[in-house]
Length: 416
Image (cartoon, rainbow, N blue to C red; front, side):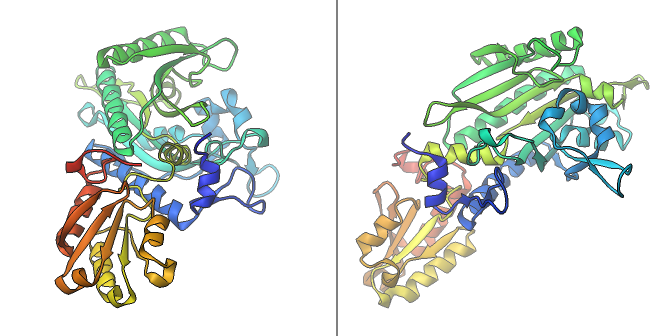
C-alpha cells in the first residue's frame, strides 16, 4: 500500500496510541489536532449556512433511554455494559453508542409547530462502540468516536428535499477535501432479528431513499444486511489504498424513533402529527475521515486542512527579522505558520525538502527583506512571481478560506 495512515500518522506526528490509555483510543498530537479542528470548523460552518442549529448532549444516558430507542434490544452487542450509580441497584447509565436518542429527547422537550419544520439539529459529539480488539486499527476502527451527526425533524412531504440537501452537503465537503466517493450504496435490512419488524416502515423509508437517489441521478447498488436497525440508509463509500471499502457519510430515513419517543408537532389543522427523522452525517466519524484524508493525500493535505499552511524560509540569519514579520502577518490573517531558519535545517534546499508537505513556502532573501517583498514557492514546485508580503499573505489566506484542494486557484490543480 502506497500510503498507510497508521504509518504516516506517526511519521508526521498527527496521532498515536499508548497501551496505558488503551487499544482503540488514539490521542491527537498538535499537528493532527490542527487537521481535526479545521475539518470540524468547516463542517460546523457549512451546517450553519444550511440552517442547522447546534446542540451539545451528554455522552452518558440511562439504560431506559436506549430501551426506548431500540438500541438495547437491537444493538446491545456493540454497547458497553451499564454502569451502576450509587452502588448496586442504583441508576444504570450507559456510554452512548449513538446521538439520535439524545436528539429525540431534545426535540420533545419543547412544543413545536409545523412552521418550525424542518428543524435541523446538529452536533459533533462523542459516542462509544464496544469493538473487539482484533478489528481495531489506527483511526478507522476505534472505541471512542467523534461523530459529525445531525437529525432533521420534518414532515413527510419534506423528507425527500431534506435528504437531497444532505447529499449536496456531502458532495460539497468531498470536493473541498479533494476526495471522491467510490460508490453510493442503498443499505437495506437482511434476515434475522437484527432489524425492527415493521414491513410498512421499511417499504416507505426505502421508497423515499430510492426516490432521492434517482432524482439526483446517482448510480447506486442496493445491498441487504447493511441497514441501521431502525431504517435504510444511503451510504457513501470510500476505498483506502489497500482497496478496503468503508462507509464515510450517510443519509437515513427513520419513522421508528419518532414513534418510540412519541414525538409530535402541531399541524396547520391544530392537531398533533408525527415528524419523520432524517439522520445525516457529512463526514461521518472525524477519526475515519482524517484516516482517509491522510491516505488519499499522503499527508499533503489541501491548504485549508494542512497542519502547517505556510513555512517562511529566510535565506540567512540576517533575514530572520523580516521572516518573523511575514510570519506575524500570516498569524493575523488566520494562517498556521512556522519560520524555519538556517539553524533549523541547514541550506535553503534542505529546508525546502523538509517542508515538502507544507502548501506555501515563502522565501525571504536580502532583496526581499530590503523591499518588503517575498518569493512564493508552492508545494508542487511552481513559483509565484515576487510580490509585496502583504499581498502574498492576503492571497494565501483567500486560497485557504475558499476551502478548495487547489494550492493557487487561478493556476488550476496540480499538486504532488
